[in-house]
Image (tube, rainbow, N blue to C red; front, side, top):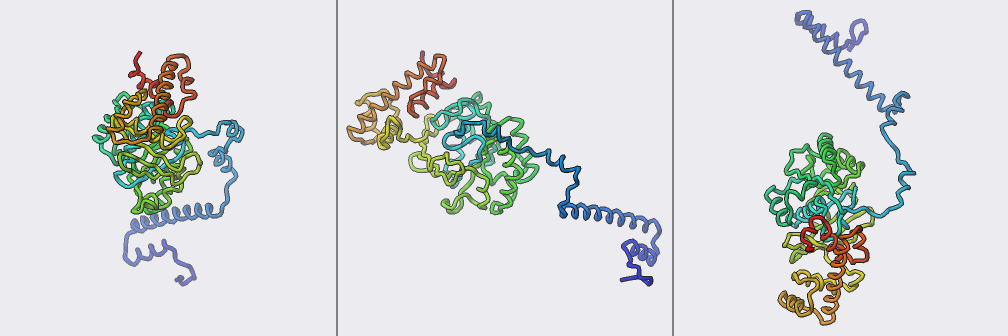
Length: 409
C-alpha cells in the first residue's frame, strides 16, 4: 500500500493516522510512537548481530581475546609422563579421571556394591578385598534413590562409623538443579571444587536430569553442561543406571547415554550372594571382560572372587580355597579341621585337590604373618613384594591404621 505521493507508510504513520481518525490526544500518540521506535531499534540490533554471526566475520581486535580463553596441549609435558599404566581407584572397575557406568535391573544390588566401594575408598581401606590407592579418596555421592535409614544400616553392617567417613561427601536427595542444564552443571561443579573430590557418584542418572530419558538431547546436555567439565578437571564419575526391558540391550533410554562413557558395566546378581560385572564397552582396554565377586555378611562386604594365581594356577583349586575361606576356618588350619568344616558345609573335594588347597592356604598364612611382622619396620610396602594377590590384600588390610588395631603384639 502506498500513499498518494508514492510514500510507503511506516508503523509510525499508521499510528498517527489512527490517532487522527479516533481523535486520540497527542500524548497517546507520542507514547505509542516511542514504544514502536524502541522495538524497531532492538530488532535492528538483533538483526545486525545475527548477520554478523552468520557472516563468519571476526573483528581483528577480538581474535587475541577469544584465543586466550583456550590452552592447547603441551606436547613436552604430555610425553614427559613415561608411566602409561592405568591409575586405579577401584581395580579393575573404576579408573581415576574416567567416566564409568554400572547398570542393572532394579534391586540387583548396584547401589550396595557402589557403597561398599566408595566407603572403602573414603576410609583408605582395601577395596573389594584388594589394595586400594592407600589413602582416603575424597568422593561426592549424589543419592536420589536410597533413604538415610538404609544408608545408616548398610554402613553399620559394613563396620563403618562416623569417624571413618570424613572423605565421603554424601548428598541425600539434594535439591540440585537438573544436571543437563547450565545451572545444574555449575552447582555440581561448585560442590566438587568446594569439597575437593576425586570421584563423583550419581545414583541414579535418570534422577538428576530433567529431560526425557529417551531423548538424546538430554544426555548431550548432561555432558556439555556437567560431565565434560569434570572430565577436563580429572574428576572420575560413576553413574548408576537401570537396565532397559531387555537387559541384553543395555541401559534404559536413549543410546546417547553411553556416548561419553569410558567404561560400561552390566551388573547381575546370582545365587548365594554372587555378583557379576560384565564389561559391555570400554575405551582403554584395561578392564577384564567380566568381574565376579562374592557378597559376605559378617561384616557386609564384597570380595573379588579368587582367580587362578601364580601359586594356584588351577581354577578349580582356587574355587575350593574360596569355599574353605567361606567356612571361617583359619588359614593355618590342618586337614582334620578343614575336612570337618567343609563336610558340615556340604563341600566335596578330591584328596589331591584338598591337600593342595590346604598347602596353599598355609603358605599364604605364613606369608601374611611374615609381612605383618616386616610391616613394623621402615618399609611396610616392601613387605608386600612377592606375595600373591590374596595374601597381599590381607596384609594391606592389616597394615592400614584401621586394620592394625586388631593385630596383637
